[in-house]
Length: 464
Image (tube, rainbow, N blue to C red; front, side, top):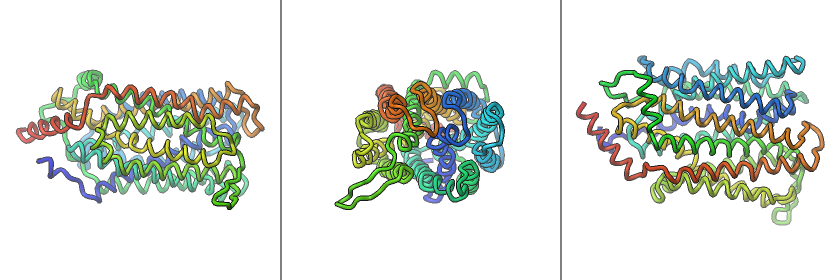
């Protein structure tokens, strides 16, 4: 297939991207609200929550390569990856509701319940999201087209984030009527139902086009060898661990930052004084940040062509983390500064999110070009493994740091606990973001290199 004929329709780009809207209805809820739900509503101690995140997310990450291997070996009339999106969307939603359900158990019973429901939820997340991520690597063989698809995907992902940020607190209050436990259960039910519908649309509107070489035999050991000798993949995977630790620490600490540190404030805008409750401040902070991120996402293709994918990813991640560190100096009353910093951090992070997955699919092409073998789902599953290690590390550090600084839920915090909350939002996550950007400076797959790889792979497929 000539490179110019490998374009996807607008309908398919939108259809694929809606799957990430669905995923982010869960993922953003996990990052932004699950920690404070567990400590302030469900009733877990902060240290126990951190340990729960460590165990569950490492267990979940270990399942990703297994799921990837299974998906690579799946053959149905719907393809390798799409069936999992279809058949597991509803079970995924059910586990989401159960995770945000607060049972009337004692402390030990609640802890056991949290471990069981959150672990099963993350298993469902893996079953749906490993095939979904792999699907982007096989709907077109064109690298720049995949970058554009990734841009669509992450606009849709941040629309999912906007839905979560704009509606969740309101849904909790509406359904809870004074009971946060009831409110969270119903709020998650609404988000889960919408997610299932969007996954169905993704299944209906997409098609798998790239197949492994016909002579390739399924050999797990060779697939693993190819993966761990794939230098570009190793670099982006390492950067992903740092990147996710950065964004999870920052995202999970936002609700604590506004509830306990910033509180209610007044904004003087052009001579008009606007009263902001901490709930309204939190929601507007999150929403404005997501809008800025979407602007960055939309401009990703332009930045990538001018600066190259590698330079855009590394430079924007470092800049985003460095600006985020400035939050350490912001006082509760510095309302304008808090918003401005958030807009800059969020805008710079937009292209990072897009390029992360576009570059993963490039490493799949690199592996086929170098080894004449392709295991797209295993590679994407291993990539999700790296993502979830960052998710695990970030979530665990939030719980453990809160406990270390003496945080006590629903109480006036000590000066030491306040300092810990501020550090969680600012300096601590920035360290990981900068480390991830520096690592990616060594990434070898430039735009020019990818054009060469695509042309040679296209020629091989035509010969076959």
